[in-house]
Length: 133
Image 1 (cartoon, rainbow, N blue to C red):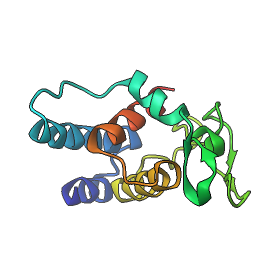
Image 2: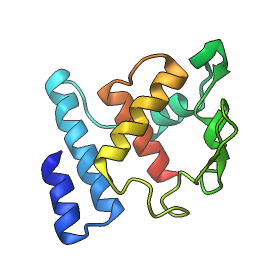
Image 3: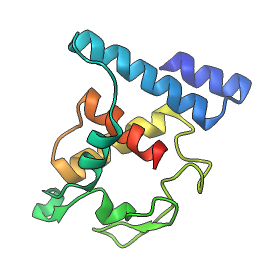
Image 4: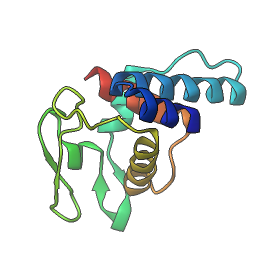
């Protein structure tokens, strides 16, 4: 991961390249953990992103609760009402531009919605869904 961050800093690699490299790294980790792993899935990512769960503070939430259905528009944090910049890279070029930030928000948001950290496959599926939405 540190190599990816260094390449981005030195050569100004685009968000698309950062997220592609991040997904390649996750795929390698998934394959080590489960040799039958084939690829990440937009469909599974959508299910993870849209399904509701009893999450943080015992409230029923999903990723959509904060980010909305249209990822090209701003969302609003379900718990704090704070505005959230669009999740779509097309609408917000800062999204998926740093691996450290991707990992931070995946961890935080999985905990908010699922009360646990996401698995390697879940993270890859969600990111794959978001970048293809």
